Image (cartoon, rainbow, N blue to C red; front, side, top):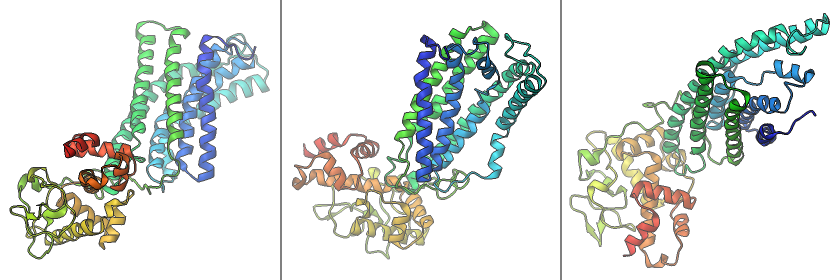
Length: 459
């Protein structure tokens, strides 16, 4: 038989088939929609799938076929750990930046993997092409199916695999570090981050690190403790199959045509560099009471619905414009007031204008509001608006906008006119895009779920 269906080969076969099928689907989808990320994900899947194929075909009897199938098993480069790390990294880069294009200099990341493939090609060319094919010399090893360089490459492969472990671990760490920069980037640019947070990608990085750790552990045991037989080593490839399953499902569920225009660049969005949030000066800690601005008709303290209760002005606050309001919020619980005019008059003026815009035009009711859109409506650039929000209000853009949405939701939950509304309806009316975002933001900003807050407001 060409394929022996035993317990070991049969259990790996579904993972292999899924890896192949999903890779083809991703390549087709990427070509149709022009999404580069799908191509990188397909390559990542194929690298894992091909590696798993070695053990699947081995248990299917190909090593013991003693014919061309056995020769194929000795010369085909099933495992290329040196390519896994860079592929994962460039998948992340292309997923988080729609303008990303692979440059010639990026080939340096794949140079070790290409050199290894070149060595395998030389071994195949010499043993199979020249010695056996042209000169007619029989293969000297494994029942006449394996040549000289195939035996040599088995020894070389051990060290290549060891370097590959280090490579995968490094690129996982590099990608994870840039992933946290990316999280800061989306919080500074987008008010709705549900579809672009890519939490599964973080989990994938952790899973790949665990996979490398498991493989490394098996290698250490095999070399330093006891020699593992094929059946014992099989479990390592079962773990690879589970990773293929997770990677395939997550990749298919990722929206290939995201509405959000992602343009993340780690070089430009490193910590401490704009446009990522810089450490904000928390005036809640420095100055609990709001600082009125003499030249403004709307106090910065009113930036989070004005501190008015039944028409009375909160102590220490300047008169505020009349808008729909919530309850009086203690100073220690309010978002930070804008910086004093004496410290930075320009920033204070923009903070006042931003407050007026938010309270009169309610731009936060647009679920997919972004920093550039709000800057355009305010008549400034994204850099200035980011400074105003980060430094003046001590928040990132996402928290700043969602605080308004949460307060709008609280107002509606308190209003008898909305008593018949479901929580989802209230969420959508308040500017949230989904119930999951509504729950997550409420939990983050209020420490409770919307239903708990609603019960407290109506009690």
